[in-house]
Length: 339
Image 1 (cartoon, one colour):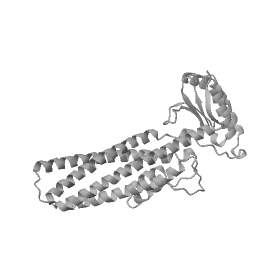
Image 2 (cartoon, one colour):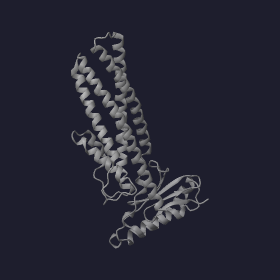
Image 3 (tube, rainbow, N blue to C red):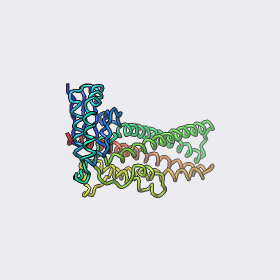
């Protein structure tokens, strides 16, 4: 059974499927023809072979096209990865050596019209795994915050009994404090884990924009994450970045058309409200001392903040899944359109 070309863009890249199911990406990069394994819309594969040229193939388009054709022709009847490696070394390498000599002497960059290559398939890195873990963590946050709401209401009823002068045993107080401490510890651990995975996912999602055909981006992947840690700026800049990812990841995105992303705006509004109520609750709790009334007021604010965080987490799941789905569909469309 012959190797099957899934996509082919002359002078740029080709995705090939072998009889044993292995997928290979033949890719033109500056100064090199590279071959690596490629999972279906997965993370970066393993480099298995390359040939370096004494000139930049990206700038010498005819030579790049011929180099890619030579490599693909040499594996025409290959069925396994071992066959491919053998054929590339024994058949493609000698012909590429001739091309390298001829190309270095005869091809002049000034004589070749600039060519804008199609999106670089090999640079796309799927965020599906990170999005999946992030969705799971956000789902756990919803469950834990539901427990926190119930626990907070129980604490408020206990404090209300104390305010009305009813008898409350030391055992009840100790059990309440232990339960609340456990819930708070679980929330803190989940928040830290989710924040780390969210930053990892966000960095990859933003970095993928140029690889799916987005010509202009406002920020850098590093700053998209960094904005969360800068006071004042973290009130609006992360929202702008996530909104940009959400809109520009769409296959139908048009730069000239102003677009909105209400789901992103709703998520960000819920997130800001959650932070404000949490901050107010913390301030009251820290200054309440033994004042039962202030402790009760702080408990109410914590219950409200937990309830808002449930909404924020649900909206965040929708945003993450929406962005990931759009990027994967966009990339599938690029591959299908280039076939």
